[in-house]
Length: 194
Image (cartoon, rainbow, N blue to C red):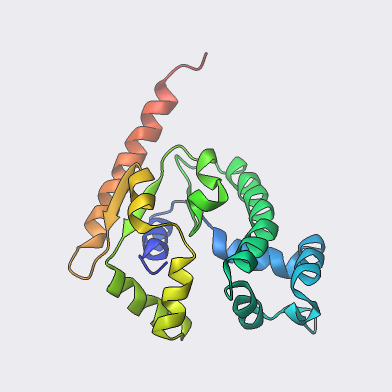
């Protein structure tokens, strides 16, 4: 959260790489999937939807109030988002595609991927970004961040890590990653399948 993974994904998107934005997909599914709406309403109450539209602020307040509520929402939304991502990835024909997701390891989505790239930034930088992006307080940002996997543990599981601190130059790192992934994809396409 606040590391800049969406920025990295947006750069790759501009380069023509298909990008699946898991958070946007989850929001879309919570709005359009009747089964998901019913499950959210059953777990959190009818207040989750107002005039047929998801009340994101209300649901976020409920889901982030305690770890059990967060787990409940994730258990409802993650399977639907994972299935949607698999369908999307199966339809891609580019040399490679990217899945941008905040809870990649927590949801088990990393199992479907060939390579996991992490984006790292310092804690204070991340807090400031989350506060600006979400219009929340420092404590609210910290509370949300505490509900995620430890940053060091997460980065240790990644195959590659990009540095998006305030002093790092992100664009050259993303361009180098893009070239590496194109080379990897080209090497795979030349390898005979058994």
